[in-house]
Length: 221
Image 1 (cartoon, rainbow, N blue to C red):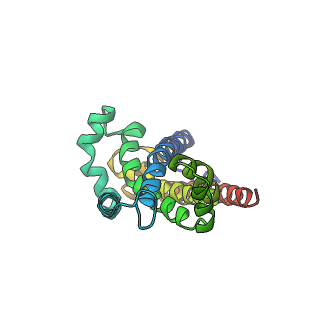
Image 2 (cartoon, one colour):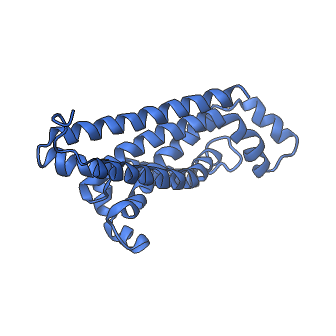
């Protein structure tokens, strides 16, 4: 077995895995915190909703679409000055989190908006007929009814973030992507590339399994 993995430093692999999980965890939490209210705002300002505003919805949609249209590797580079301003560095786990959040939050916001649109209109109208405020409408009707879709959206976003963390390795973010690029690609160490790819696949599979289980749980409340 050791003959097959002569270039593998398992301590480096372990640290890179922890770095990837740290980037994923930190960026996912911030993505949900920012993307959820953004998705709710997109929905509420849409046609026929309580905050209907063509201008407001158009402005939000424009920002979301612009950020989603920028390739993540370009976003990483463009955001370097802002990242340094926010966290003091553009390198390592900390330096990767701001661009990860900026890249993923608009994507997640669209998933939230889609999940909210799938809520039964009769449920929304019944809550409004009882005199519910917008806050009550969101917290007691929209979010509970859309929860399975939102959880599915979090799962999809988390998996997208795994691929983003791998790309972030190209600009010194660390993690499994960094090992794959520096050793697997640049030094032609196929065994390092193989191990990093397998570990990324395992992380993605675990995320998908956990997400599917949570969606089934909330779908049968």
